[in-house]
Amino acid sequence: MPQLSPVLGIMIFLLVLCVMFMLMLRETQSVSPPKLPTSKKPKSRSPLLY
Image (cartoon, rainbow, N blue to C red; front, side):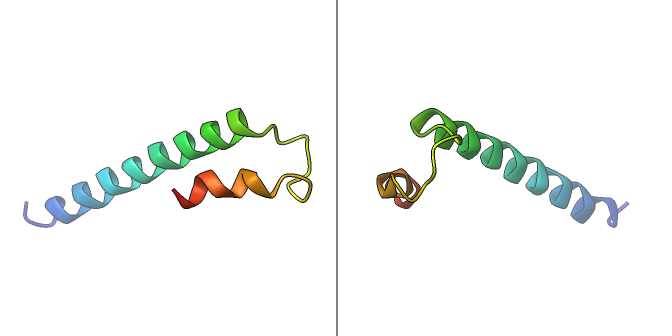
């Protein structure tokens, strides 16, 4: 039984990372469409620093 606790913790941690990653992708796409090159809009990287 004690071996299942770390596995569950890792699974939950991975799920949280996936959710945060998806949210970041949605925010970046909403702020600046992926069709436009990032070189023309350096400001698109500023929200990621916040």
